[in-house]
Length: 300
Image (cartoon, rainbow, N blue to C red):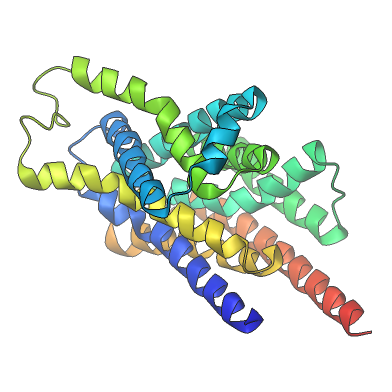
């Protein structure tokens, strides 16, 4: 039974990170629609999708419990803004030929999570983790000092998703209930904006073609399903194992950007990515070492 659950967790993790990696292919189909309008539809249709899912499962107990706790609801208000900002920046990056920057941001994310754990959760960094964080910082600083540019998109994506994950950990609510409440908090704003948009707006469903409307509605599924797969994987496999899968998404984005969409991989990006990849090697080595020590301790 335990092996079956572990296998399910691995499959779900692969699905989650693969879907995140290939998500740019979907957003490229909507490149004529502004990132803001895509986000608005993502909020609305994610809410509809999650509501239908919760109605089917009949699991509103936790939702009702959170509604009675102002502190948890307040944190979810913050996380809803953070994840909306993260998606807005990601969609904009993909549709404005900055997919490499998006890929870099999600490569940096696990290293940023380590720093957040140290600053806010009292976690102590091990030696290899310090090496990884230092290499990542050197990569970003080299780009700023030598090339005179700040990787704003990359830092913005890593920061927003890192803070989102930290706060969601603190609020301690399951993925389905949390995602439903996060989208519910933003739905009134999204609907209000769409109603007052100009009639010739590309996201106006009354004037769009059927194909365009279906694509916009699909935003709810495209963005919600990976989150649900990730949450289901996280409860079935250890975080150390889950950590190995987190590079799948940005690696797929990197290959799509270079091979399919022809984004330039110049000296500036190669130096920054080089430092980040070295940092991730150190980070992964630390996870392997820690995992082996745990296995050795468990067997004795």
